[in-house]
Image (cartoon, rainbow, N blue to C red):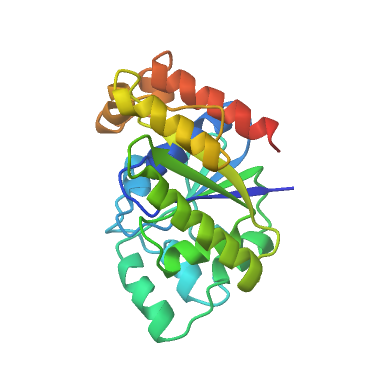
Length: 252
């Protein structure tokens, strides 16, 4: 059975796209068939994987806006075992049209469920904020993964996402939605507040055991046109994403 995880946080810059990219690549390297879905109008995930979000004939926008659009018509395959439903700049207008024109928010869910293409894991990258694109991701998913930077504002974004998950589960027609957990990111062991923030999070919400450290290799890799697996597999960041993949699989 396909696991579908939506990666979300109200705040930007907490590692959502980085997590989707590197977790997906590690799982694919372990032999899992992985689909990445880019719902962010910035389309950073799409660009990191080598596709121009300004020149795509079809994208995740097509899945959201057109009834009957199939997953197979938009897919790209950047590497073995890894497929991409790319994002595009059109997603910025989709966020408006979905509301104004009253399009159903369940088309992504339908496309994933009706696809004949078999995947072990689907990772949905969402934009920062709590707009309709994020809601569409939540409606399509079975689990929510919440990257959260270890700083004093972290819990604000986490609480907003937990509240959205509850509403989608209880009021919007996805009763099976579960919280996989909070993923601490950008953890700086030398910062006095970081450990306290992590301890506070663990006291209040479900937090994964894996902690993604602050590691410049993680941010440098995309600028070199590489994934962390290829650029610095033995770096602290590379090792952390391998641990995350193992933890996610153990929670299956």
